Length: 226
Image (cartoon, rainbow, N blue to C red; front, side, top):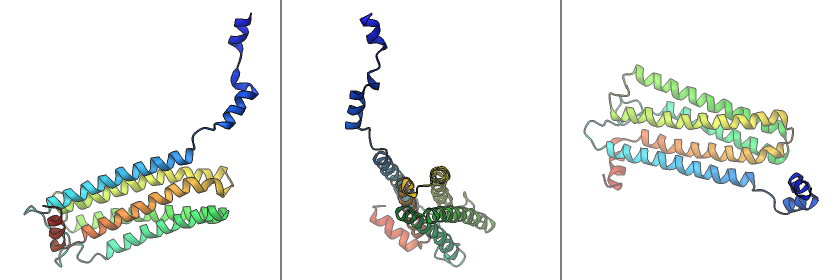
């Protein structure tokens, strides 16, 4: 009978076990998510770095024609790209504003900031797609020039990372509905804010690269040994 009693025993329900669990809490979820985000940012950074290196290497072939420098090339006047950049910058500022609302305990500011960030991010993606259509109407197709191919590739990969960020941010939006405490949103929204700022920085690098004249591209390629 003592054996059966021992088998039926549930030591995790004993006060001593509860005290031990309280003394040795589980891992910090926020810290784990922060480490995961850093790992993701490192991978994304390396990915775009490799794309840029291959772009510079490919630019040294005679069939490569930069998208800026001559009047007929689309990014000699980069006003459309400046407009798109402003949209993404507004999204980054909006999500930072929402994060400030969580730290101040103002749920209405948090909701407004997240909503504005989603709005400007979606508007940026739509503007990027509209730019694709405009370039194709001008005859700048993907297969007609390696520089065109890199433009479509880089903007597509960047856009996909923004879409992934929107999926993660939607989880924060759902938490607003069932959790009225803005303080509990601070940690996940901080991670999303860091991600948005990072993608804004990536886009600024891509913007500078895609609007560079052939002389600048050749100088960068020479610095990399190409």
